[in-house]
Image 1: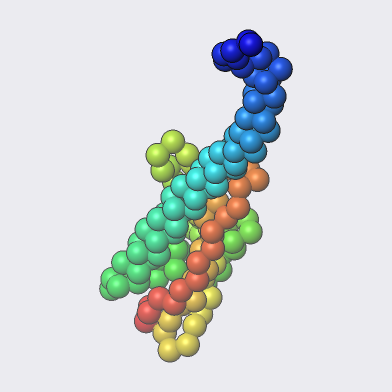
Image 2 (image 1 turned 180 degrees about the vertical axis):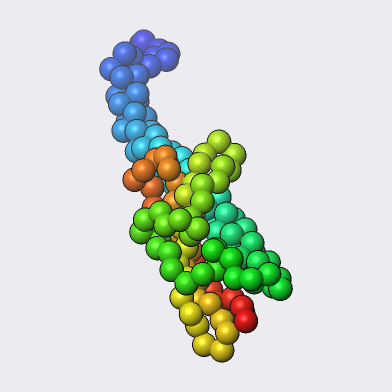
Length: 135
């Protein structure tokens, strides 16, 4: 009677195929996870830059200085308009911030701000809206 020890080549190959079929989808999920993580990091950077610009506009509105270009009604979130856009660097990326200002009720300004990365061009933008008291 022969005593079996170890496994045969066929058994080893079958085990490797089963393992490969189980691991390949996990590798795909890891790639998707890295992409989502990168987009989330980009979204946080854009939200931080939007918040910083809103705070800057609020600070301008709180002064006794005459109306500045940044709070003059006008601008666009679709294209660069003088006095209503800027470029800013955050970490290793450059972003464009555009804002539109409209007259609001009772001495307020309705401000819509869009932040978008310059690279990658296909990345989505973040848009925020707020009212700033400016009498």
